[in-house]
Image (cartoon, rainbow, N blue to C red; front, top):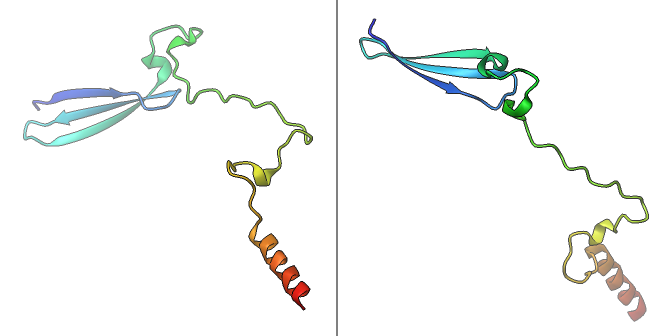
Length: 103
């Protein structure tokens, strides 16, 4: 078997497992893939206490300070840049009142 082993070490986004993807070409030109799951302790040559090489799965979340109910803004005005417009229900009530006045 004259195999050209083009082995690509794919470090997938995992902290504990290193995936080695090997692309092999047989003598008769047949492609075959082999996936190897290697524990990442093997793939990293540094001692385990040295955390510099261990990829973090995701960045640490920034904690927001917890708001007390007094400082919580009114949720209806939250994202609005333009001045407050009456909601549909409020406009309908206004129309009802005007009709009542006309009667």
